[in-house]
Length: 334
Image (cartoon, rainbow, N blue to C red; front, top):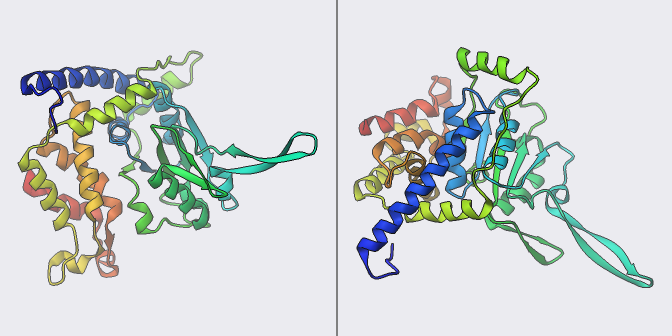
């Protein structure tokens, strides 16, 4: 991290002030989202970590857990243009990316005009992404990775910021096309959405079935969110935390002759290390801290690594899970 002013003290003071201001707004943003999403504090935090890190997330949960509501509310609170696409087997890439239509603006003169698809949003919800064909899935995932689409040889840049929160139903797999491991790796986090506890569900019953709904206000704008994302990349990370990330990610890879070598067929690559590095900085900023700690590494290890690891058939037969393996790997840091 370079000091543009040449004065380290002024630079540090400026960074602290920016971090404090951003953290204050993030606390307010999390509270605003919590007005509409009950009992999902960890899900809200991880979704905000994803967007602050400049990445995309895969939301995994059964229907009816407010995943769509989460994306709509976050779009409003963070000042982002949010759209939703329901993925179905007959959805074509052009239905997402856009297409060219032939027009006749003046008599006798025809021209093609590009009509943008819903992917040209700042926050896109890809609902039940595994129901679309592999061709449509890969079109979206390529746009997520590249930040632009190419139609008829012409490049069209996506908005900035651009984030995808995709959903997936973990129990109903008939007629679906599971995402390959290489495509899952494009998601910064896998966020597991569980049932709310009894008290949260009680509050939900009371507050969502009345005549008045909570008003949700905008805390950020798109420009302010971009500034916060740039700030995340400037936050310092201690050498011990860097080494902890390397130790964790590298230990999650199947090496021949090791216990994990028999349990895993595939492990996280360097992109997982990059994702964890960004995610822990974002979590620290949300909590009002200038630099991440080992607690951040432990808290985000599973959502960062889970979708980047695959169990062997023998391990599945023995009842092993990815969550248990990651818990074992992070035990050294607690």
